[in-house]
Length: 332
Image 1 (cartoon, rainbow, N blue to C red):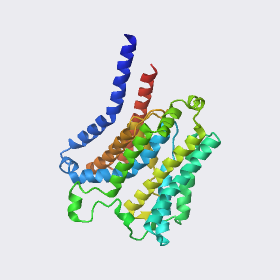
Image 2: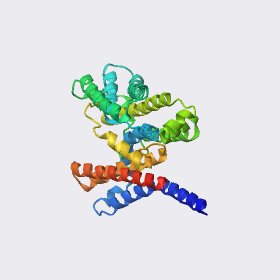
Image 3: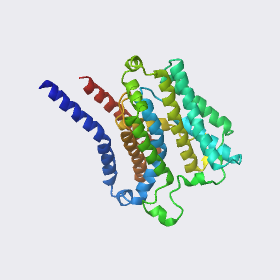
Image 4: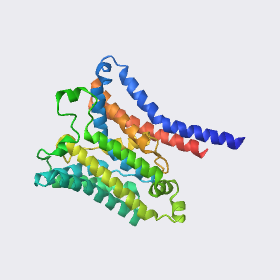
C-alpha cells in the first residue's frame, strides 16, 4: 500500500511538473489581460506575433542551455557569446562575404566558444560556473575589440529578413505569416526534443546530470560527452547571435547584457533542475515564452525598465525556489 501511494504521489508530481509551465503562462497572460488599458491590444494576433518573435533569441539559447543544465552544468557566457557572434556576422558581411558564409561563420563561432568551454571544464575538471564566468568577460571584451568599441553596420542582406515581422503593412496587423526565425526555433525545438528523449546521446545527458559517478561506472565517457554538450549548446548560442544580428541589422558588442539570466530562468521555469538530471525542451520553450510575455506586457503597461528588471529578478528567484521545492519533495 505504501509503495502504491508513493508511486501515485510520484506520478502526480511529474504531471504537475509538466503542466506547471503552462499554468504559469496562462497566469501571466491572464494578469496582463485584466488591465483595461492593455487588454484591447495585448490579446490581438499582431501582438502575439511580436511576442513570438521576441521569444526566438531566448528560446534558441534555451535549447542549448537545457542540455547543459540537464547534464548538471551551467553557462554564464551566453549573453556575451550572442554579442560576439552578432559582431562576427556583421563584420563578415561588411567584408563582402555572402550571407550564407556570414551565417555559417556566426554559428560556428558560437560552437567554437562552446568547445573551448567544454574542453576546459571536462579536461581540467573545473567548475562550469567559474569557466563560463571567465568566458563571459573574454567574449564580451573580444566583441568590443573586434567592433572597435562601436556598432558594426552590416549592409542589407537576406539575413535581415529572418526576424522581420513582414514586408507589407497588412503583415504587421495579423498573426500570420510568422517570421522565419520563429519557424526555425520551433523546428529546432522539435528536433532537440527528439534527440533528448529518443537517442542514446540524450540518455547520456540525463544520466550524467542525475549521477555523474554512476554514469562513468556505466561506461559513459563523461568528459567527452560534456565537451560535445557544450559545443552543441555553443552552436545554438551562435544561432541566437545570428537572430540578434537579423533583429538589429547590425552587430552591437554591448547587446544581450543579462540575456543569460533570461535563458537560465526560462529553463528553470520550464521544470529543469539546477542540480541536473531533470528538464524538458517543451518546458524551456514555455519558459522562454513566459519571459517574452512579461517583457511585452510590462512595456505595454508603461512600466520603466528598472521595474521590468525587478520583475524578472523576482521571477528568477521564484524559479530557483520552485526548483528547490521540487528537489526537497523528491528526496522525501
